[in-house]
Length: 455
Image (cartoon, one colour):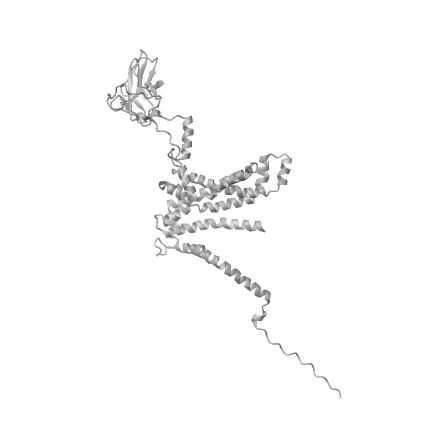
C-alpha cells in the first residue's frame, strides 16, 4: 500500500506593514527637504502676499466702490476715468513716455556702447555715465528743477541759452526806460516812442527819458550834448532826464545829466523811415542831407525790449520733454552697460570677416552688430517700458504746481486723485488697476524672453 505524502503547507502569511513603514529612506529624505524648503520660502511668501497680492486684490475690489467706499458703483469709476480730461491727459503723456523715453535710451545706450569700445579709458567713461544711477529720483528731480529755472541767474540751462543768444543778438540796454510825460514824446502800442510834433531840418531836439537807474547806465555814457544843427541837418540827444541829488528842469538837458548811448533813432516821413542813426556816448544823434519838410523822430521798440530770459523749460509746452531729459540723464548709463555686456559677447570672427570683405564700419554696425544684439536690445527696451510706466518721482518734483496737470502721467494722476486733494480712492484704485493691466503684458514678455534665453 502506497502512502501519499501530504502536500507542503503554505508559509504562514506575513503580517501587513503599517503605511508608515512602506516609505523608504529616500522618500523620507525628500519629504524632509520639501518641509525645510517650505519653511524657508514661507516668510517670503507671506511678505509677498501682504505687500503685493493683498494690495492688488484690495485695489481691484475698491475700484468698484464710490469715493467713500460704502456704495457699490460697479464699473462707474472705469467709465469716469475715460471721461475725466486730466486722466486723458495722463494717458496721453504716458503714451509719449512709453514711445519716446525707451526708444531714445536704447538708441543712446547702443551708440555709446559701440563708441566706448574704441575709447582708451572705457571703464572710467562707463563709470561716469553710470554714476547718475546712484542718485535717487528725489535728488535728481531737485537737481533738474534748479537746472530748469527760468531765471538765468539761477537756472544753468537758461544761463547758457541766454549767453549764446546775447553773442549773436545784442539785447536792449534800457528795458525800463520810459519817456517823461508831457515832454513831447508819445508811446505807440508796439512800445516805440515818437515825437508829438513834427520837426524839420535845421532844428535841434532833446528826448528825455526816466526809469533808468544812474548806476545801470553804460560805463561809456557821457554828459548829454545835443549839438547844433545845420541847414539840412536834424540833430538831437537822447538823455536821462534826471539829475542825481535833485534839481534840474524836466525836458531840459542839465549839466549833470548824461546821454543814453547805443539807442537807435529813426527819421520818419509820410510813414517811411528815411534815415537811421545810433546815439553816441553823449546821447547825440544826427540826420544829415535831409530834404525840406516835416519829419517825425521815432525810437523803435527794440530800444526798450526786455532782455532775453531764455526758454520756459517748465512751461506747459515743454515740461514733459524736459522731464524726459532728466530721465535720460539717469538711465542712459544703465542701457549702455547692459548693451555693452551684450556687445562684448558677440563673435568677433563675424565682425572681422565683414571688415576683411570690404564692409565699412557703418555697414558692419547696421547689418551685423545690430541684428546680433537684437535680443539684448529687446530686453533693454521692454525693461525700460516697464520702468517708464511707473515713473512718478521726477514728474511730481520737477513739474511746478501750475503745470502739474500738463505733465501728469498715470502714476501721478493715481496719487493726485487718491491722496493729493481728490480724495476719491475708488477712482484712484481704478487708475491703479489700469496701470497694472498696462504693465503686465510687458512683464510677461520679458519673463518669456529670459526663459527662452536660458533654454
